[in-house]
Structures are given as C-alpha cells and as structure tokens.
Figure 1 (cartoon, one colour):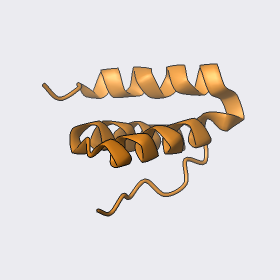
Figure 2 (cartoon, one colour):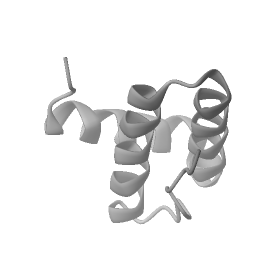
Figure 3 (cartoon, one colour):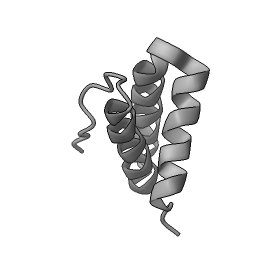
Length: 67
C-alpha cells in the first residue's frame, strides 16, 4: 500500500530532525541500498521523501535512479 502524502511529509521531517544537514546523504544512502537490493517500491518512497526534504529546505540532490 502506497504511503499517504502526510506520511511522506512526516518521514521527511523526521529524517531532517534526526540527521540535520546530513539528511540528504542519509536519504541517498537509503536509495542506493534499495537500488542494490532491487527494491523499486522502496526507491520510489525514498525519492518522494527526498523531494519533500528539498521543499523543506534541505538540499536533497538528485533523486533519480536508473537501472
């Protein structure tokens, strides 16, 4: 079941509160690990979190993953 928008915003806020300026790196590492595991759904969730981090003012960098 896909996460609701409010859940994605909550996750982004929690990642930012927990990791501060390192939040984008944390998200990138999660996306990388999920890419290595072949978890496309997980990648999509973390990309959505990265976009929200960017909107919260954290520089989340690129969120695209190619296979």
